[in-house]
Image: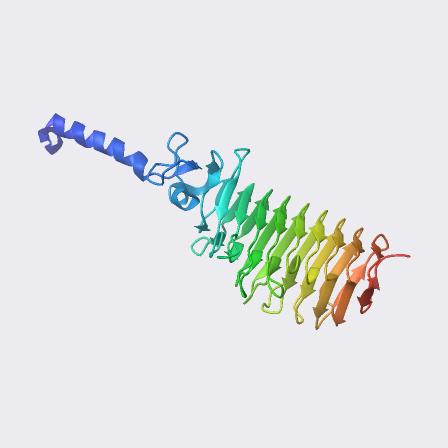
Length: 329
C-alpha cells in the first residue's frame, strides 16, 4: 500500500481546502480598486476595495492596473514596477502630498518598467506644509502622464516642481498629454516640468495639449549633468504667466534640443530661453506665438534659437541675442 493511501481522507480534504483558501490571498490581481471608503486590509477587489494607492500596489501584479471607484484622496505612492493608476470617470482620484512627494517612479529592479498615470489630481497644498514634487521619474523605461492636474508643489529648493525627470542611466521616454501643471515653485526656484538627467542617461520627452501656468518656469531641459542627450517637444500647449521662463533649453555641450510647435507662450518672464556652450543646446520654434512677455526670446552663449517663417513673435518689450532662421524665406 502506498504512503498516500495511508493518510486519512479527512486530513487530505482539510489540506486541500486550506490550499484553496490560501492561494487567492497570496496571488496578485491584474486589476485592483481603491475607494474613499475602502480599507487597505481588503484584497482590493471591486467589492472589497483598498483605501490607498500604496495599499493597492502591493496587491497588484506587474503590468496590472489600479482603478479609482469613487472620489477620494488615495495618498502618495512609490512605483517600482510596470503599472497603470487611473481614475476613469469616477470623480477625483486625488493624491494630497503635503510635505512629501506625490508619486515616485523608481523601478530599480525593473528598469524597463512602463508606468501610466491617468486622470489624477496631484496636489501639494496646503502652503503651511507644502508638497515637494508632484511626480518624480527616477528610473524606468516609459512614463505616460495623461489628463492629470499637478499643482501647488512649492517646497523649497531642490524641490518645488510639478514633474521632475532625473534618471542616471539608460534612455527614458516621457509623454505628458492633456495635463495642467500650475502653481509650482517659489519666487526664485522650482517650476512645472524639469528634465535633468545625470550620469549617462538620455531622455526623450513630449508634451502635447498641456497647460503650464503660474509656475516659476514652465518647462526646462538641462543636459549639463549628463553625457547623454535630451530631445523633446512642446506641442499644442499653453505656456503662460510663468515667473522666469516659459520654455528653456540649457546645458554645456551635450545636446538639449527642444521644439516648440503650435503653442502659445504669453506673460512669462522670458518666452523662450536657450543658454549653453554649443549649438547643440537649441530651441526650434514652429508655428507658435510668443507675445506679451517682458523678454520674448533670450539666446545666450553658443546656444541656438531657431525659427521657421510661420511664427508670430510680437509685443515683447525686448529680446536678447539672435534668432537663426530656418528654411526658405
